[in-house]
Length: 92
Image 1 (cartoon, one colour):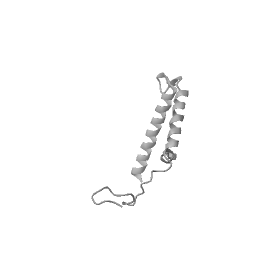
Image 2 (cartoon, helix red, strand yellow):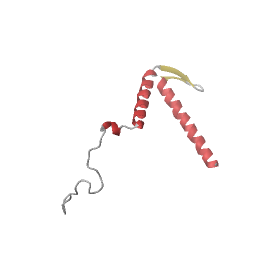
Image 3 (cartoon, one colour):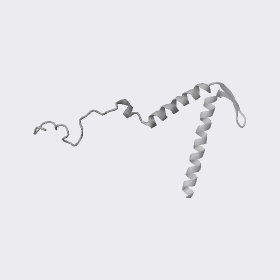
Image 4 (cartoon, helix red, strand yellow):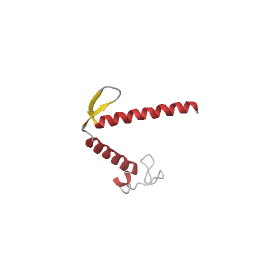
């Protein structure tokens, strides 16, 4: 029961005043686990691909870490896909 002018009593607004059960486990969602696993795999991938490689494309030759070459290639590939999607969206 609530006192006039005082704070509402338990259940006054229809909410339960019981503490949430489950604690941390109830807050960890599958997407958090997947994100964590992806980040761990990415870090392992980076550490495994730190050796220097020779890269030659239309002329100049450079030496760079393999991970850098892979990331640049992935970024360029993503830009090409986005450009193609934009062109197709304008046509459709």
